[in-house]
Image (cartoon, rainbow, N blue to C red; front, side, top):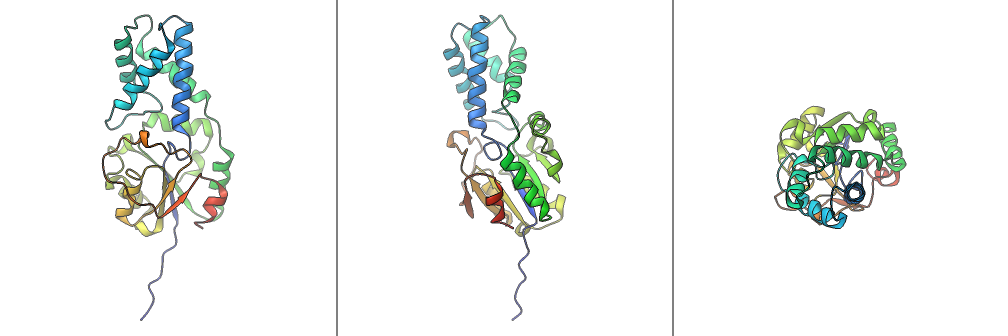
Length: 239
């Protein structure tokens, strides 16, 4: 019998938060710095109470198309209402918070070198993130990674979130491939792992993984492979 030819993996998909960047630490550190700033400027009576309130409201908000890392106006509105903050607007605080977040983001040499390796081997790269478009745009502008990507797919932009299969189908259509020609790297066995339903190879990235940062509903999927971080050594395994 003739052997079925195995198609090589030509498209490498990457989640953003807690895969390419440590969003758990980034968000936590930014909230602490904002709490310090609000307290020093006499907008809150206790920075610890502000941090606890904001963090709880952020984590309790489970709805599509919000950025738990870049912040939402409603997070600050609810926090300030709870704490009776009246000397600064929620909008101004969101702007300050996002400024702090962006100051903490720097290009990651490991990711740059990993993407260079993939491009050298003629692989296509796609970002696949449940995020706000403004957050992704800001990240790309700060890290200068945009030229590496052949496509950027953001949930807010297409109106569906992972684990909805339509999210992954967007990538397959964009590159005119079937699932077996693609690999998805992500920290979330529910959201990212759902790609397996379409035959996409799922690699779990664990270095920044935090179970508290899973808001999507659905069943977790067993990864096909597990790595710690996105770096050249780990990418070489899939070439």
